[in-house]
Image (cartoon, rainbow, N blue to C red):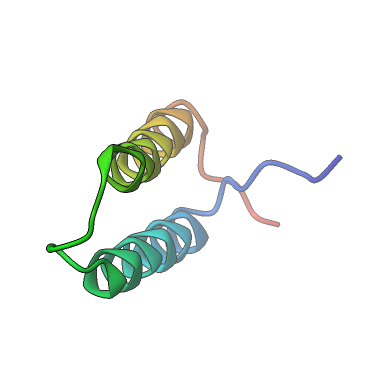
Length: 64
């Protein structure tokens, strides 16, 4: 199991990377052919980022 990320800069970088992936997936979806599963996947991605933000809020900043 990996060590939790407590460095705030690393947390921000992680969240930015996840949001960039979300934007790339969103850009790749064709609005004419998107279905419910595509929308559900986007919602799940946002939920995952939100969950990670909540986890990060609970961690103290410490040197790694």
